[in-house]
Length: 358
Image (cartoon, rainbow, N blue to C red; front, top):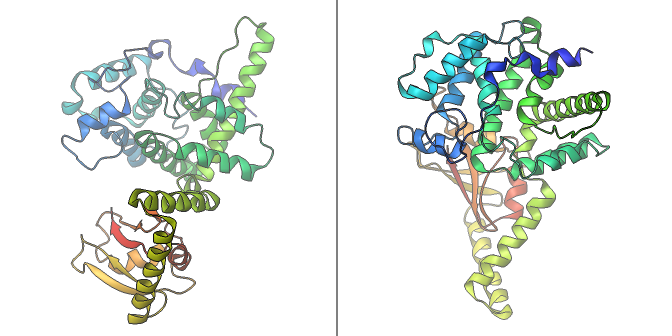
């Protein structure tokens, strides 16, 4: 297994080494926080969730580089990366993207991630990611990664999600680009993880530890690529606790005594039964303010999913993807996974509203 050739930082030219800058710097592109980049981007694109330059780099590779052999692994010219980096920092808004080749975009993408003042996975939980490797069960490892991803700041979470979607596309073209899941994981791991604190240990021991870190980081990246659809979903056991906390919090905010809470609960149950009687059990009303048909009554059965509902509102395949949200009741707001069974949600949160939006 050619681990050193895929992981070694020797493939990163000397002139592109990470430059530490003021974490509060908000001009340019590289070594700028995700929040600062998004703040600037939203002046033109209010709904953007991932920095525009990051999305542009992904787009260039997707359009022209997914079939390129060794994409992400083969290094670009050091001098060219230095020039492109300087130009992007100087005039991002007027930058000529047509001159950027796929190998350049791959190099700039890795450079962008490495130079974030706050790592994409954040400093706070970096040691916790390492501890995930000590969990024997892959299922529990995925659950731990799931919790860690949910703890990420919003900008980091959305950017990581965009990256993982892209990496899965790279792997899907491995017959052409020779970038298997393990190859991609080994190449990207050193850009996401920075664990190198070996002190003055002998070189043989230090090399052994670096190799273990390389393999461990690649294992985590491989898990995140493979199970990425689970990483953004709150586990069922935690979801139940969230609902209980929200329910108790709502009642405390109302300042109700226990007898009044019981009375209110009976009243809500009575109103809910009345709503069920008016329609029939298992019927929800879905609101879609961005569509011509702003609401629709839908009968649920044991197989109805969120995707089934959103599909009924889709008439134009070119329109942005929209999602079904559970709003109110014993939750503040939750975007439902496309495969989520709605009857289960209906039973645990009968007083919620159903909303379709971006």
